[in-house]
Amino acid sequence: MSSKAIQNQRNTLAIATGDSVHPFAPRLMKVGVFTAALQELTPRVVRDADPDRAIEDWISYAVDLDVRHIQLSAALHPSQADVPPEAMLDPVANTLDLRSPFDRARAQRVQSALHANGVAVSDIGYFDNLLHADPEVRRRKHDFMRRVFDAAVLLGVDAVCGFVGRNMGHSLDQNLVDFEEHFVPLLREARDRGLTFCIEQCPMPGWSVDDSFYNNIVYTPGTWIALHRICERHRVGDQFRIYYDPSHAVLQGQDTRSIFQLLKDEGYPFLIRGFHVKGQVINARGIAQWGYGGQSMQRGDWGNNGQPSPRAADQAHAWKKQTAIAEHELPGTARHDPLAYLQNRTVDWLDHQLAARELLELDVANTHLVIEHEYPKARVQDRERLKPILRGSIAFVRAIDEAAAAMYALQREVLAGQGITVQGIGREPFRS
Image (tube, rainbow, N blue to C red; front, side, top):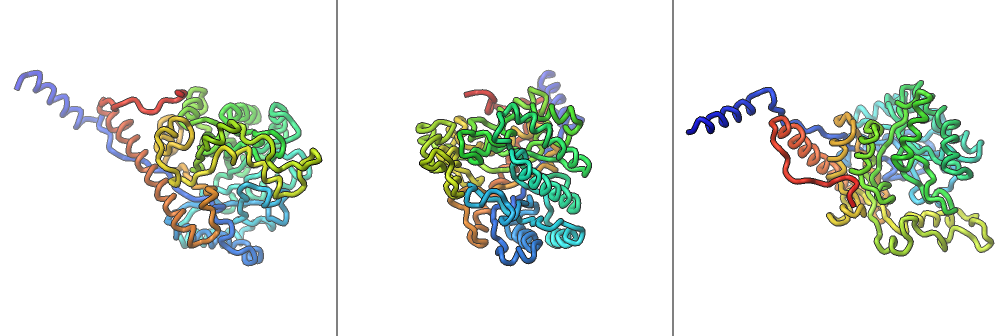
């Protein structure tokens, strides 16, 4: 053996036995499910009389689904809501019933069920318009959110999830003022309770029967950054975070990797705290007909008199701004379609999980992946029929995260630690 070969062998041995060797130790995220996936798991007649029964039943169902975390859905009771369920694309569930305050006795009952079943609450979700133009309606929603805050504290949960919303009577620029005036005080109250407020970035196009597509002002990274700067001025920047949902990115022609890269480039990779894993499949024919603004006329939400229809079921047609061009995906239910991934017509789940690890500032082991089920064709409200559907999606999400964790650990830690290059190029941000 030549002296050069001997030296190369020694170098290889030194690398293999030295301090630069990084163990293969993939870190997984926490997979959970949003309890709105089955709104009537507990019949209304039962849970109205015994509100916390709905939570107990969902805890038991989570065990059946082989998942150990739930995002608890809270909503105004149908008897108190300002928007009828029939006007919604996907009505949320009041699994957490807060008609009466959630006190220590209720919290102890829920915690006992959680402990007995080995299940934990990731956070509490209440998705509503907290910038509503009507001061009295807005006050009721804020009061309800404060009850959500208090319930989170009693359950030992450190985050809530929801929307900011929009004052429909104001421009988007004016809504920055509305945010500062009406939402920042809620963030102060969250801070006082040790909570983080995580915002899902759905644009909520169907919330308005007019031509407005962006009715939740936290819909894209440009607005996240603008709002966070307002929060920083009021010393509540740490309370404002994003619960990223890739379905809404696809709806707006965006892809996860580019969004995460932009956040990193702008100095905001810390903004995303958790994930709703819900997909979107773009209808190419619908795009050809209407474009990304969705159906803009002849939807059926307006009457012949030039005024919005007073019927809630008619107002639901405003959602054709979305449904004419896209359909929600329960993770794992859309076909594997590499071309669609590159064209941002559906979610590339593996790259989604890789990009999160590569570009964001995450405590991976304490980051939640919450399955949010809104795939219309599989939206069955039957416990036994839905169980294998959700189990399959949960298994898919878990497997994708395991694959991404393995790739990241192998490429970015094990190989990088030994100076070995990674093969290929991979998906690139900002590339069309």
